Image 1 (tube, rainbow, N blue to C red):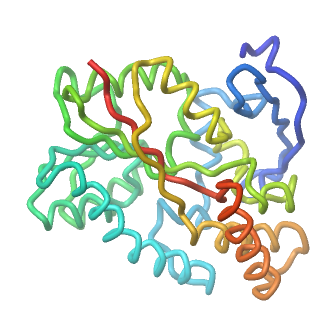
Image 2: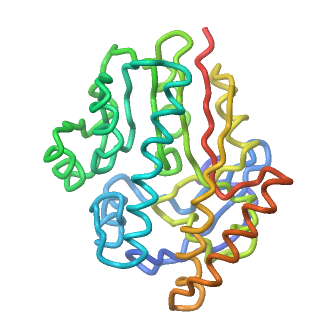
Amino acid sequence: MSEDNPGEYFLTCRDYTVSGKEFDLYWNEEKDILKTFPEPSSTELPSYYKSEDYISHTDSSKSITDKIYQKVKNHMLSFKLKLIENYFTSPKILDVGAGTGDFLKAAKDKNWEVSGVEPNSQARNLASKKGIDLSASLDNFGNKKFDVITLWHVLEHLSDLENKIENFYSLLQDEGIILIAVPNFKSYDARYYKKYWAAYDVPRHLWHFSEEGIKRIFSNYNFKLIETKPLIFDSFYVSLLSEKYKAGRTNYLNAFIRGLVSNLKARKNNEYSSKIYIFQRNN
């Protein structure tokens, strides 16, 4: 999928967080993923994260929506740790896009050996106050090897995607695992909200995945899908933001109904709003 031929036009979305600009989504049929177009340059992209509303970089808990996000995030920390413990009891772990460091802090408290990457300096500073020192770049890890790599709603933000996947492969031990949480553009809430679906989050989200799409791209780099897990809270939170984008105000009842319907439909078709994919590195 090149800049000259981004694929088949799919949808136009607005950046509701920072700029108000519109971006197009194009579908690559072979890979079954969507691409944000045009992609901001490496010098432009950081400006799209400069907002107090970008909660994963701020630890904000000002609004009711912020409080819901933080409460769910804290609940999910134990879920993620237990999920990893199904594979490794005391892993050497790398968290990519570590934000303000809460996940690595919880892992460190269990005496895991932790490392992390976070490009945003504000988020790194907040993590440092929690005793978590983060690197600004994945390039700083050289020939180090990890048992586990995690990307919690991060893969969709990464430019030069396929080179990054190759890099993850090289950073993993033999039979190491990578856990990836991403939104699913084939979920009910995505189809219902269309251009207002908050999980498109253009242009910060450069890529938009289906389950089939993420399996295809990782299988090309010698990864084997070994497990998936639904993230049932995501449909409610994403619907809450989507209602605000669509109507200009927060409608908690509508958001709850749409989130619930999305999860109920997903119990039949497996198209949850977001999922965790666990891939193992093949030798």
